[in-house]
Length: 559
Image (cartoon, rainbow, N blue to C red):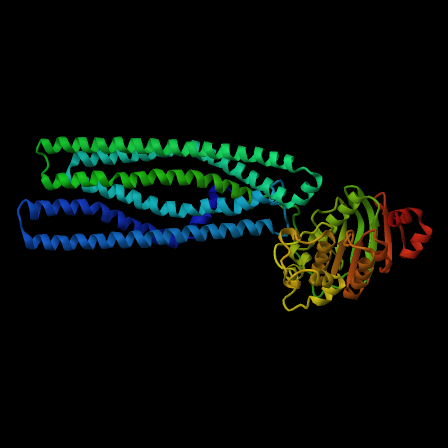
């Protein structure tokens, strides 16, 4: 999708409000243009030749025109603002939906702060184009109405406006081009600055532990200054564009006034026509200035639309896959000649309801295996099958509903402890068995507020071991047919680890479970253990047998 496509979608989705707002705005502008004409008529018909009755009648007409233009302004702006806010809201949903899409890829190369900036400020700017379009149409109607009324009052003045106004609009579009480029640079810098700030805040504890506060401050200062410089350049471009347009508009109105004055002096127009011409000359700067503002808004909106389009059209990490699992999932997981990056070939079958431990001597190979199991990457060779269906053939949402990969660095969310545990659970699921299995009851008892206590962004109020237990409870509460867990207890003491090993076995009874870990306590609770050394399976037996008979395994889990 292109930036123009984003703009078309934002406008088309709010077509009704834009049309209503434009019509009411046009009524307001026509009413504004009629006011000086009516005043001129009142002067000619009731002041030059005094007539009290006619004056009262014309004043009633003038009051009705004011009522119409007031109504048009109020409800026209209301419709335009509604269109702008709703379009921005739908764009935010589109961006968030793309970021959360099962096939992934939108976050590649973009820090979280940059994505937040796209979903907020860029979406607001593109949504605001609906308001700009509404006001722009009304302004064009105002200029045309003013020109027509001027033509009726004086042909030379009307022709002058008809020629000069389009020239000003074209010049305004030309002057807005630098603003568009600088606005895009400003948003890029602002997004980068937000991303750096988010990363620093997330890692503040680590930075303090390393005593790297000064380096972090210097890094953010440099990024912030670059963002400020881009913002100043964009503001300078906008000021120059607005200033030039105001200057040119003022010169144009002065020219209209000069020509009108000469016509009055020559006797070509009467007193009422003079009043009307002067009033229309004073009215015209409003819609013409509005057109200049609309040009600036479209310049900024196009830059933001291009950034939104980049996110929405980002290629996915994985492609293909449209099949759904037929019927209830039995949970058989099979790796057939699996090869990816540094791992493979691997042939392994995990039977339905079986608990299997996998020890991988190279952490990078463990990461490769996890990416294939969670289908964040497709294998270079071979396949991973769920109930006999290759994962590459399954629709991502169907796969996620049956197989869950709980990674070692899984993040918590800002909210209560209970919110985090039940984040992926089905409605009505009792979370207590999962919490008990992961020893989260101990975490809750240590917090003020228990399960209702807020854990902070990314679980910042919890210790490392507490975060691991809450993340494990969340995975268990999801109750997927197949669960693969990676090192869930590295920050947990030995006694708690033994309790969790028993809890996982109990909570996942008759459910397929794969534990990728080097924890002796967890491995001892599995049905069998597979050792992957050098990227391939080199041993397979119970934990006790491997400890006794296999030196590589013994070194991996006991040292």
